[in-house]
Length: 122
Image (cartoon, rainbow, N blue to C red; front, side, top):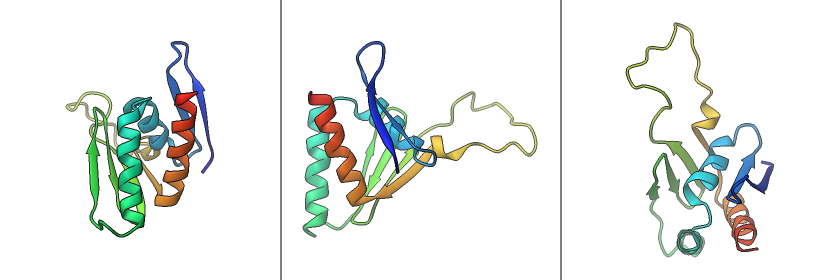
C-alpha cells in the first residue's frame, strides 16, 4: 500500500493511496483531515486493541464514510453511493469499488495514521 500526503490549493491536507486503497485516502482527506482529537482517539483505540484491553469492533461514522476497526484490520466503507439514489445504472455496469470500500491491517493503519498526524502538525 503506497500513499502520499500533499496540500490542496486551500492548504488542506490530502492523502492519495495506491490503487485498491483509494477509499482510505478519501477517508483521511475528507473525514479525518487535521482533527487532532480524532487522531488521538484512534491511536488510543489502536493501543487498547494491541494490548487486548478491548476486543470488539469500533465504528466511527463520518459524513460520507464509516471506519470499522478491530484487532486485525481496519475497513473504510462509503455510507452512500455518489449520484442519485433513483438513478438506474445501465445493464452490465460495474461500480469501481476501491473508491468506496477498502481496508488494511491494523499495524499498517497505525503506521499511516502516525505519518498523517506528523504531516498535519508540521
